[in-house]
Amino acid sequence: MTPAVAALGFLPTDSFNVVVIGAVFVLISLGLYFTFGLLDVVNLAHGGLILIGAYTALQMEAWTGSVLFGMAAAAITAGLVGVAMERGILRFLYERPLDSLLATFGLAVIIRQVVQLLYSANPRTVPDPIGGSFSFLELNIPWWRLMIVIITALFVVAVLILMERTRFGLRARATVRNPHLAETQGVNIGWYRAAMFAIGASLSGIAGAVLAPINTLNPQFGLLFLVNSFLVVILGGKRSLRGIVVAGLVLGGSLGVLQFIISTVIAQIVVLVLAIAAVRLRPVVERQVGEWRQRRAAAEAA
Amino acid sequence: MSALLQVKDVTAGYGRTTVLRGVSLEAAVGEVVCVLGRNGAGKTTLLRALMGMLSKKGAVRLDGVDISHWKGHRIHRAGMVWVPQEDTVFPGLTVLEHLDITLGGRNIDAGVRVASDLFPPLAERLDQEAQTLSGGERKMLSLAQALIVSPRVVLMDEPTEGVAPVVVQQLIPAIRLLAETAAIVLVEQNLDTALAVGSRAFVLEQGTIVESGDVHGLYESGVLERRLAL
Image (cartoon, rainbow over all chains, first blue to last red; front, side):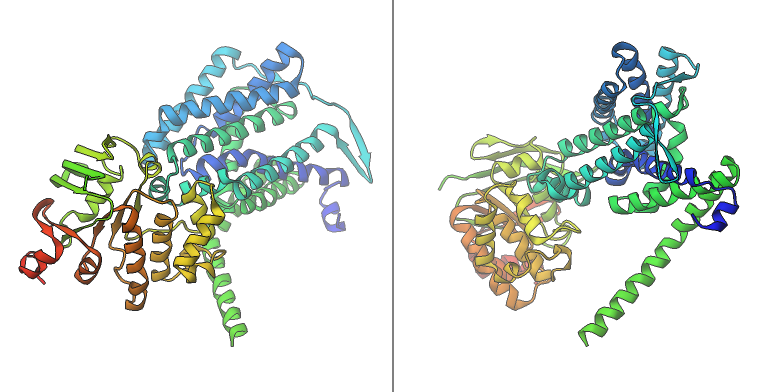
């Protein structure tokens, strides 16, 4: 903690929350990495899938008393809804981006209304599955917030392994990068697209369930994360999981730091402006880096 | 010789535009059936339709089984493979990963050995991203992908187009090798290649077959020169 940051009112305890907010940004973007990043569906129902996960955790906690069990149920429920969305509607719209945008917007509204119908618009809370906190150095760390960071890290590693170290990942990447060629090389691209959408939806559901205990739930819950997750995926590079992780940590971390210094609303505006500027400047930076690498390679070759 | 691939009255196109009109042809194992025609005649459309990439009317039979409504991946698994003219690689994936995808994760080592024996340049580039290969090497990779699955029918779309003559000399033996155990439908603008490997030929004009017969006979009688405006 630098004195300058401390002078702005940023306390040592807050630094862990910055890490947590960064992790949350990554966690909410993992599902969108599949549905939007890989499959090119401008998935406005992403927030709806997060909402399904959160309310599934709420319901399972009411039925079984276990939020952790609710998380597994959230993954399954959101995954099944994702498969139904993809097989029922979106698979016909892969070549029609505007139509898929409209369809997912409609699905998002339907999900929100169904949740409101079933649970009303009244705010709900999900109990902290672990509760309590511990002290580490100068930091007071709530156990569940630490778990959010750990769960996010585990899912990032799992997705990396799935996509880069398995035959499923290889065929999924082939499907994404050249679907017509993949189909004629024996890859059932319909199955792989459905599987990727289901995985993305499941991850979104898990994100909702994991974040439910630290938020107040209402039918607008998923909307809170929609814009930020799109920003993270666009800024990180749609098909680059590593880029998305970095973008999530940077954007979430920036928001975390800023909202301890200025109001949350202003902080969100500043982060949005920074993200838009970064998206605008990224091609220029990438071109400069590419040219520098070429010059360096040429110099080494000489 | 009974035909392994039977195509009867196939009509296909893009949206409301009809490109192929009632095309019929047959190909047997050991044959290289050339489909010749000027640009826009419908040659590539024919291969795309046979490979399940376009909706079509008419019948396509593989070894007597109607595959007219099958999707591409199922047709590939049934033993009919496609060597496309362009857009032949997956960006970001290595040569080895291309072979892995084609083989469906089975017998990778044997597949790599076959591909490397036939095309030694590929053996040196297994870990290289396929999009960084030269045009000729990409053609080699496409042919290798067809060869390693021991296909029954191979649909080839201008495999020697835009390739240096020295590379063509490497590709032609591979086509002949494939023809020993498979039926080949070869779309080709390069008449030298068609004459080097072809047995029968069909000439397409505006989506319709206007000539057919022995490729050398058609050439010597001047039909190809007249139809293809050589």
